[in-house]
Image 1 (cartoon, one colour):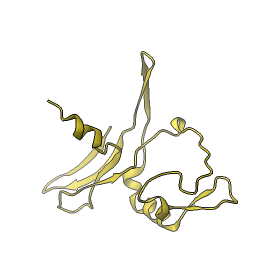
Image 2 (cartoon, rainbow, N blue to C red):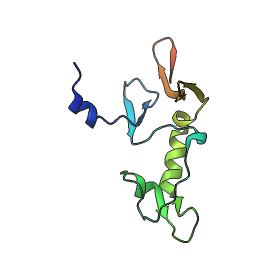
Image 3 (cartoon, helix red, strand yellow):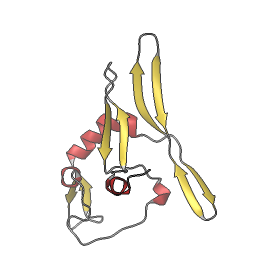
Length: 125
């Protein structure tokens, strides 16, 4: 039986990846972040200074009212992208439409684990 109240509150939009390539079993999730194909992004214009509610918004983006678009990357976003790009880089985007429902699948690299005699690479879709 499903717990419907729990399902409504569950945070489903997150990117999960393995921790550093050490022996720990740490998984890291970045809530509020999701992969999307560039073709699926819709243009959006707002006059609000904080158009999105996300804990990292003001740390990653700066509002420049005289520019178009009015938001620009801060150094913290550039540093975060540089540090995490191996986990965030997309290799492929597959789209399939069945009965007018389009599904997009994006496999991505989660990280690598070294065990006693082998390296294991994880990719999710």
